[in-house]
Length: 354
Ligand SMILES: [Zn+2]
Ligand SMILES: [Zn+2]
Image 1 (tube, protein in one colour):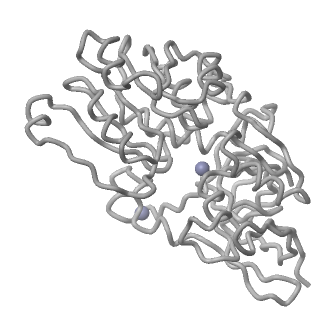
Image 2 (cartoon, rainbow, N blue to C red):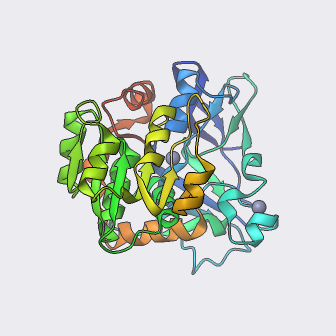
């Protein structure tokens, strides 16, 4: 007789339901994680609002925190004791492809092959789950990361988004005293601000919304400005003796902004396209300008094993406190409201508690 658990399912566009599904049974090499809370990332928001290619119904959620509920008989119970609070990097890395073998597991060629199908109890068939928006999730021990046992769930579920940002920070190669521009004051922009400050930079944020600019300043941002009031490229040049910033992080999905990001970087500087682009409109870059400046234009996608490890360290040691970015806690029964709140532009992270 199989056990039953509850899962939060995006059943159709703009609709979320709690469904009963068959709870995954333990496997010999696996750990069953009891989910405490899961945050709703842009990825989940896009599936909810119909701006994603993912077929519905679907169970998402990859920013989760929980505890070990059960371990398989081939898993070391001392290392993975029942009841221990853990974070999980749910992104699938096969460990055997070209990129995984080079330590670039965030580019794993099998990254999209993850997912389990859960049988529903109402006869509506099997539902694909690619995440942790359910009471339990079966994971591999290699996906588990230690976090401070006393860290609140509302902070611990930042392990994944912060890890994404730390991968980006690594690409930016910030040096002490550098000027760093963060374009966009959404949650990812704010996490960039905190991580760049910790890396010893002077941080400048371009963000039209006054409330967000104020929050960025409270998080340590040195200079904020509105791109509606000041020409962003000229303003950054005016702060840097005309050179531009050593590092520019673009956390917005807008093509015109991507072009500006490149224009405001200094010779030898780095531009990191952090956000995916919607729509993905090509921009012009002068090869001669690249030749003459040796500037680097790059991107950052998904957390690597290293950046996830760094993220849990920063949260555990309280070197980064993301609590200002928590916009709302919802129970499982309020999942619809949680998705609606998360999709509003004036919120940062909303979490569902299980
Ligand atoms: Zn995420
Ligand atoms: Zn791989």
